[in-house]
Amino acid sequence: MTVLILAGTGDARQLAQFCADHNIAACASLAGATRQPKQLAVPTYHGGFGGSDGFRTFLQRHAIRAVLDSTHPFARKITQRSYDITREIGLPYMRFERPAWQPGAGDHWISLPDETEAAGHIAPGAVVFLATGRQSLPKFANLAHAQLICRQIDPPERAFPWPNGEYLIGRPPFSLADEEALFRRLKVDVLVVKNAGGAASRMKLDAARILGIKVLMIARPACRVAPYLSERSLAEAWLAQWTS
Image 1 (tube, rainbow, N blue to C red):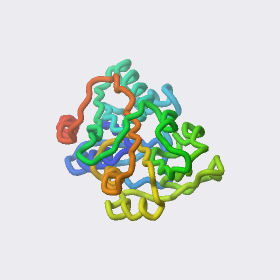
Image 2 (image 1 turned 90 degrees about the vertical axis):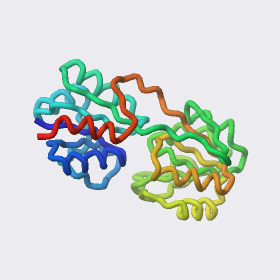
Image 3 (image 1 turned 90 degrees about the horizontal axis):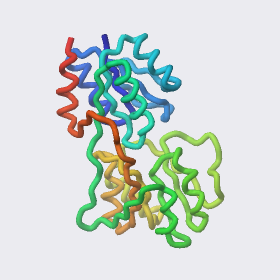
Image 4 (image 1 turned 180 degrees about the horizontal axis):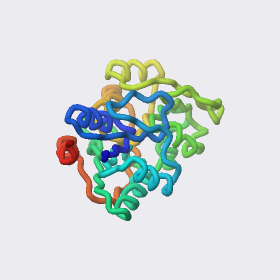
């Protein structure tokens, strides 16, 4: 019997390490958004499950006894599906999600419910750094009046979809000095980012504050599942009950 960690975040990696260190039989799943993700400390399955029926089959085939969902805060479809199916078949389920970022003194943040609303806050000719990932890029089709730079982990399979933009390849983590130097070199006017939370990926926000760069913060979609934890120590305590 095995605990399944739905991974895709740095927290999931640390929770997998906790399982390895504390004799908790566990495996992990990665949807495959990144081509060469960092190795996890437990056996890991790549590429997703193939929909709801595939997820049910996976749970049965691998004798999963509990599911810890530590996917990205914006992966709500995966979270909802996982919660619904585990509840349907009677498996213990827990959602772990780190707290959202909050603005501090000196930050110039504008909270937006969706990427498509960024256009109304970006001046003509502005240099816009998109840190929202490749999948959300189509939502910025209305930014023809700006220069776009989209950072992603893997080299693109296709050219940038519009003539006013380019890809920038970079694999995190990035230091504060790295982010500040990058934004200076690119002469960034606006940073667009999803509110993923976490200390490591906050460096771009700290760099934006130092440089006085406007931040358009895409708010998290509501999380409607329960139960839910936001402290890693509590998630570790939940995992500890499955110690062999």
